Image (cartoon, rainbow, N blue to C red; front, side, top):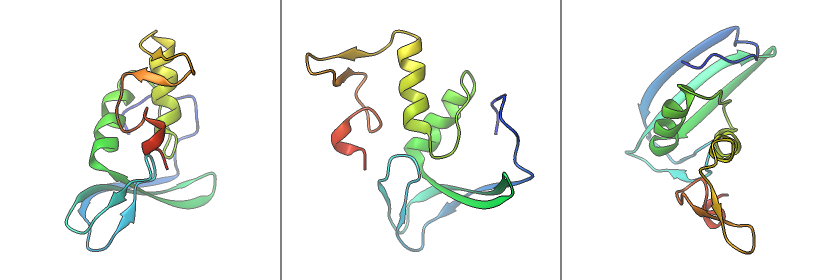
Length: 113
């Protein structure tokens, strides 16, 4: 957790990289984390509740890069990423208001689950 946010920090926080032994679902993009793939595993207590977040490598990499300039909460990477891009005038839309640039797993609606 490298960002400086105005939200309350978790009371307890633990993170580690794991290799999946069974299938999981990324808490950010909804894609499968298949057995043998590496994923970011985070547990902690936020607002008095124990939570677990499993994030695929590409979302974890994006979160890590974005946290240096923008506050990102677990489960909200897509919204925060798009808000960051919009705030910095880095988005391009088509005539139907769909994002056409940049295109990646978080900005393409057909891949968001």
